Length: 138
Image (cartoon, rainbow, N blue to C red; front, side, top):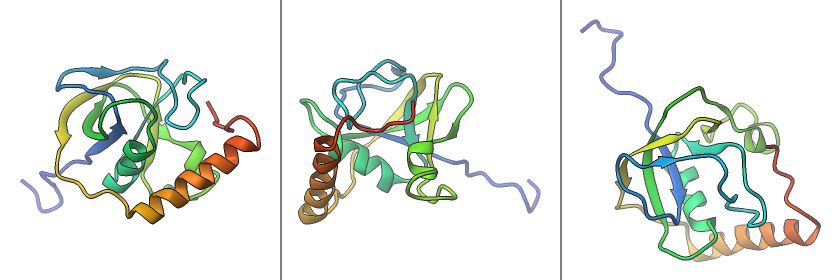
């Protein structure tokens, strides 16, 4: 192994309430975590655990919050909903793909955000919803 080579690769995470297992695929066409009425033509994921925790905590529907380690099966691009609007340069390592994400494993030991911080985020999303449909670049 050369001095510049690394045995580590980028891990990707997906936060959700869906009950999945290794080998399952996350595919396009499912509801957004932030707009229940809309199916998306992209699958979303992140290179940081914190971003995936937000995804799990804000996901709608029944079931417990889950974070999966995922592997993209096709090309990926920066998520313009975050990188262009809130975090230029993509420090959250937020991505999307039109191709499925393969479940590699589940992160079972993670710490959620403090309840007051989570409530602030939910209140902010509720204000956005009250102003009209969520503006998701899809």
